[in-house]
Image (cartoon, rainbow, N blue to C red; front, side, top):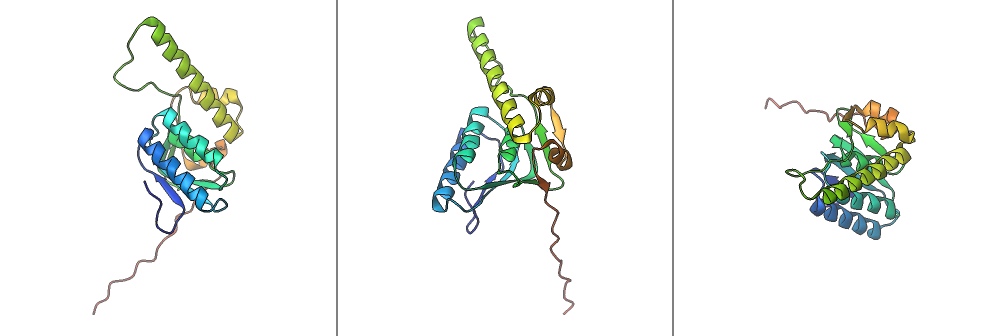
Length: 186
C-alpha cells in the first residue's frame, strides 16, 4: 500500500477499511503535495468495504488538485467501484477481464441487535448512506438517479464494456504483449 518508486501510483488490493483508507489518503495527500499538477494513478482490485472509510478516499480524490486516473485490475466491487468511477473524467479505465460490481450498502458483522429505537437509528443511517452513494453514482455516470436506485437495489455485475456504456469508466486498456525470448540452444 505504498507508492511505487518512480511512479505516482496507489494500489488498493484489499478490502477497504479504516487502515487502508488512512494509508490511501496519506499517499494521495503526499503525492499531490509533491507535485500538484502531476497525475496520480490509482489501481483498484478490491471487493469494497466500509462505506465511511471509502468516503474518506472518495472525498480526498475530489479534494486534491492533481488529476487522478483509475484502473480496475481484477475487480472493483462495492466501494471499489465508487473509487474507480471517482477518477478524473476521461481517465477511468479497466483491464479487459475485470469485473465491476454495484450494489446497495450493507450492514456487516455478526448481526445487528439492540433496542428497537437503536435499530431504527441504524436503519435510517444506512438509508441515508444509500441515497448519498446513489447520488454519487448518478453524478459520475450521468445516469438518472431512478436508474441508479433500481440498478443498485440488488447485485449488478458488469463487464468492462458494460461499465463503459453505463458511464462508470471511460475505456478499456488493451493488453500489451511482452515479447517472449526463445531459449538459446547454446
